[in-house]
Length: 236
Image (cartoon, rainbow, N blue to C red; front, side, top):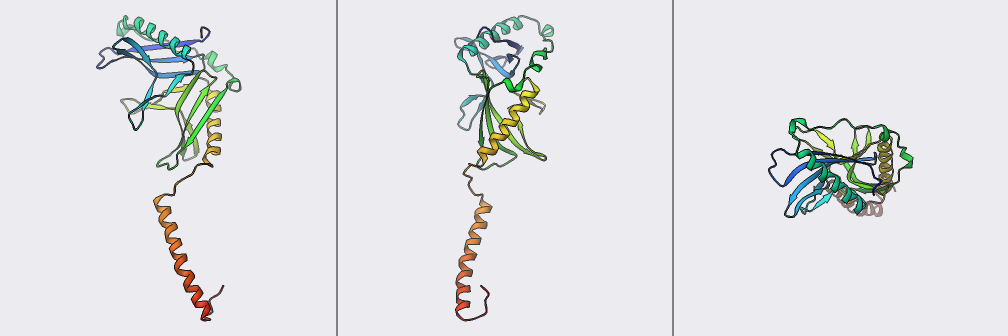
């Protein structure tokens, strides 16, 4: 993966309270950015983890990650090298210039290969209707994308985290605006297809309504039949 272009930025924690020593962001081939990677100190030294989320069973899963093992090693090596560099610079002298977006803006969305997977929720309890993942050019994958129902219809959000001030930030996202639109369009299209095949369980209210309707039918039918047999003038 020697021809892969990486834009690595590392932000050391001045007074770490645990084994996380720094956070990092990585731009890959001017196509995708991954934030929230961590530099962690373990028993065998420093290593790098991709941004993660925890499931109900307390298992951790990468939210965004390179699809190639070689690329993952290359990213880890680059992040650790940048960490050593930044950790030796006084905090007030650290910083990065704004990224040059010209190459990213010149990427044509139609030239990027996408692998879209959408998983509709059987019983959505809020505005989130489905989760999705996308593989981008066999290079990197993003999980935790959401299909959300808003006031103006369905839309797509990248996986997000909330900071100490309550503001949300994308954890991983395409750097090209047209590519972001293309991913959103593809996710919504796949959602419409997948949503039709979901075996949805009826809600409690729906179950009660259906049960009441069936009970009413069972009660009304015998009465109607009896009235008909006695010539009560019940219309058929």
